[in-house]
Length: 323
Image 1 (cartoon, rainbow, N blue to C red):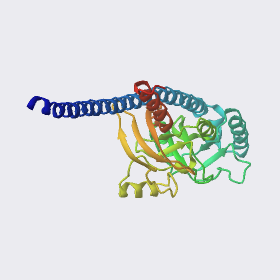
Image 2: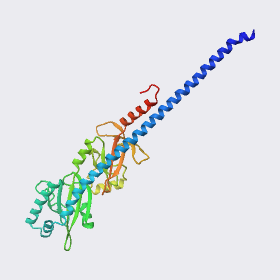
Image 3: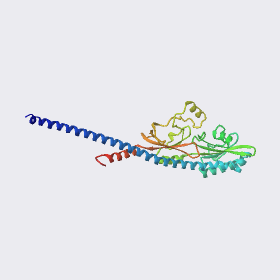
Image 4: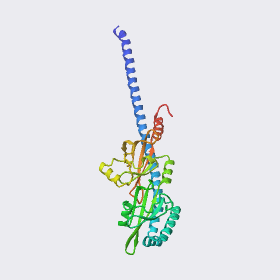
């Protein structure tokens, strides 16, 4: 009697026990699936970062090499002119005829070398001849004694100095060489290089690119509004000194619109950047030195699309629903 009455109760207990077991198994299965999806997503993200980083570094190194080639072409101009007979004769004699011939020579040379302007400065800092001698903004007669590229060339023999033109109001690199006479320095030859074509190519590439000096100040950039901004905060006293030098005009020297900067293990950085006329997006920043300079070229590679695609592909590979 007792065994017969207790049988239904044992079956009910067994049924509940089986249900609990299946619930536990189902919970474990879901937990494992979630963990697998998370791991797959993180793996996909990591692979996307590695791919973007490798491609960006190749691209950035190529841009740096091409920039070096542009610089080398212009460096040869003042080097040759510093030993030119007509340059030395014009600086020594200062006759109207010699200076006129030098003006015309510099004008033709600038047109053939794509230099923005080439000019010759006397030992007192005043320009005596220039390739733009015919233009209203001619450099002839202007005093450049305060300019770093003049002082350094007179002292050391050569200089390179990026600055805003005090006459043209256009930024560029000033490459200078001292002209040596029989009894000492008699002047300085300067070629100014502007980077409009380089910046236009960078803009067309679709990836933000910029070059900074050793202080982190942006000199050359695919976004003109980023020029003379900084990759790091500059102390107030140093900002005042830079402005007093007139190197960058009245530029604000504010930090670039970057935030949430996270360095990666290979020296690059993940960050969020606000592009001109665009919304904030995630980028991978890679850096490389520009050969023969103290400049650093930095490039931002978009991350959102690459990470989303890689994450989707990785999670689909472990999903029970398949691709």
